Image 1 (cartoon, rainbow, N blue to C red):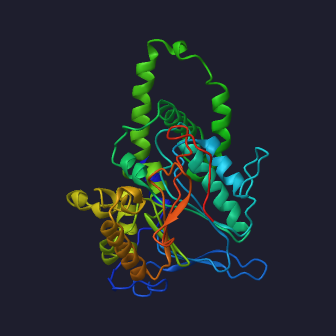
Image 2 (cartoon, rainbow, N blue to C red):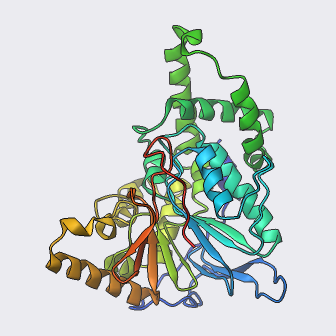
Image 3 (cartoon, rainbow, N blue to C red):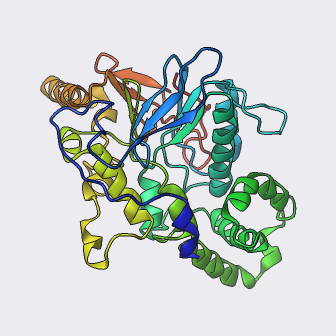
Length: 369
């Protein structure tokens, strides 16, 4: 099944350079080229994307909306999108956002049972949005990279079942990926109607079923697996107009390394295209460690726990990062904010993970816009 990913994302051989300051148009000397993803609507200019996976997005005069961590909770994900005026509430999952650009900040996986259904929903909404001059982007978080690494510590039991059912569904669709993946959101709803059985119903077969679920998840999410390849379409850092979006937080040394380079290298790793002897060299500064892009919590710490000199130092780091990218502010998820969406450091950082999933805080859904 690893071959399913071959047509999902082209594999260019980039030549990267590392300017001190990265600009939105600075892709002319690499093989990561611009592409227009939506047509001009009502006098608006089209959305132009640079990078593969997307790294820089020019979305003139668009409304920009961002949603934080969803953690497998489809109901709460829908509520967040409905509250933002992007999703119909009639059960049809219709895009209502017109030319809006939506960014989801990662951690769709783990702690909930409807992970693939949410991924399917977002792909469907992206297709609908593009037809109206909008777009939907996703940013990978630490739970996406953990699952590609085979770290299933936070996987909900229902999510293992979903993987098993999805593999069967994929086989029923003769491994026609696009058809199966986009159609899963509707199929998964039907599947649930027949699975509301008491836990004791399965008796001694529970262990066997769980083992099969773990195997199915490994097949889907291993580097080169179908869902790992789907995740490889998405970046770990995305700049839309003059806003930077990432899951945990971007630091100066990430920018110096090159965010197009980071996105491309993580994507290649997810697609299973790194050489075996290069596996230890996947971009750890993006995916592992307390200061990696997907794990960093520097900007999300409670300021009441910090001394004045620490606050000033963090603000200096944030300003240096934004200046290097030519951005005015950063939007992050990763760290639940019990008080809701908020901004700090003169609103140079927005923290939008509100812990809405029932597997986290089960809080009231919110979005940033």
